[in-house]
Length: 313
Image (tube, rainbow, N blue to C red):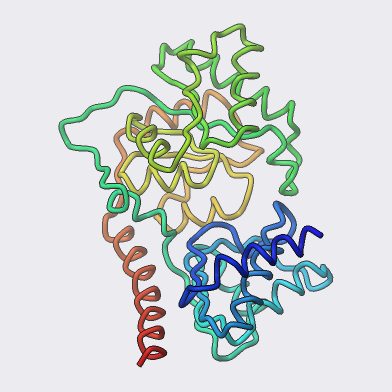
């Protein structure tokens, strides 16, 4: 029944379109969130209607030949209507395991969120000098859900120690989330268990992408937990270090030339991480790396749009 309702919905909204682009996000995954079912539905409808499809700067989270969900996702993205697939991370898995259609163009590019400043016309001027450190919170089970050992209570213990250390050093900090309910609730629980007021220590959840961008812009540096808090900070030129619960975060920091700015579940020492936060404020990024990632993203979108022009001609 769910598949029928979903199929009916997508048939309706794809009725008058010329093409389909999946823009960023962890779409090539099958173990969590169920996004594979949406991808399959959309691509199969596109195939029946002869609509070209592009997956642009998407994330790839694993491949398992023995998992039926993985095999069905693989089958869908190899349909002839899928012209180009670019990924922000594991292009080797895409090319070696997923794709067998020789007509499908594949490449590694930058995440589409690198275009945040241009998309929302948001930049931070040189005269602005924020003094607040942003600490990104995330739901307590995220490490376990992605195959790590760190428990809900273990992650909460770390955040409590982190907040305590920030207060001990009189660091001007605030907790914030990317807007997901579980993340926001986790932040509230951390503060409540420390007998600290939520108001003033946890920012209200952002209701839109613009809200998140404006939130990140007010920080002098951030500790990221969600990948797109990190990417948003990087796009805006704001120093960022991060917790790693998924290889996509490691891949991103390797791409931008900051492999030493990440901490896995075995490195969650509050003092060391606060040290890193204080030290990263004076760090900078290589603009050439960021621009090249953006150029690659744009290159393949233009290539896809050129295909549409050929169809209409």
